[in-house]
Image (cartoon, rainbow, N blue to C red; front, side, top):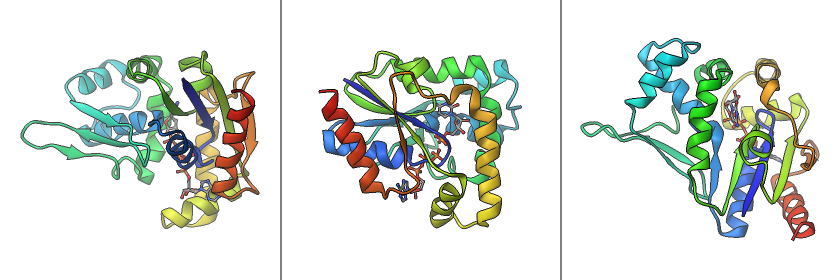
Length: 212
Ligand SMILES: Nc1ncnc2c1ncn2[C@@H]1O[C@H](COP(=O)(O)OP(=O)(O)OP(=O)(O)O)[C@@H](O)[C@H]1O
Ligand SMILES: Nc1ccn([C@@H]2O[C@H](COP(=O)(O)O)[C@@H](O)[C@H]2O)c(=O)n1
């Protein structure tokens, strides 16, 4: 079984996917973390975020390992002499600012999608295009939306920042991501603006029951 939870930036995908995965006692997979890790490594190496061959060469030499833990995905660079966890460094404003450029490259999308499709179900997969491009066969599909202001207010609770600036950055990232951020025709769209986290998880669980 595969459940997909897609949505716009900071709509609650990871938190909801984690809660749903825990309720189902299955892992969840954060596709965004793979894009973020690739972006982080590129930024650190000084590799252009629009140079697909250079990026694939960099990633080909990087022993990345994604741990799809229900409590929160973590990603590691298993360099023999210097293993390193990348999760926290992948969630910075610098990576936020660059990731969409890398994610626009078809070769990088295929690099991510191949890793996702190699996973063995059951799992919850969260991102932008899990229910459309990556797992169209998924048993249940959800797409989260929320107003930019609500998303910005949530984001500044976890990462210090100016709400106005964060809101504008989220709107900009939505714009850059729009090509891959459309709900599948059979996805249930959930506006999380006026729901707390438990309420969104309950709505997804109810949606799963309806599809049982
Ligand atoms: N319905 C909700 N009510 C209140 N807070 C929420 C809700 N959903 C998520 N949050 C909180 O908002 C913040 C962003 O959520 P989360 O990281 O899950 O979003 P995301 O869509 O995965 O973000 P990104 O696209 O940047 O990866 C987190 O602190 C999370 O706990
Ligand atoms: N399926 C996906 C997932 C992510 N992206 C790109 O990665 C960025 C970070 O994703 P988060 O879910 O961690 O915010 C996102 O802004 C997209 O640029 C994607 O293209 N497809």
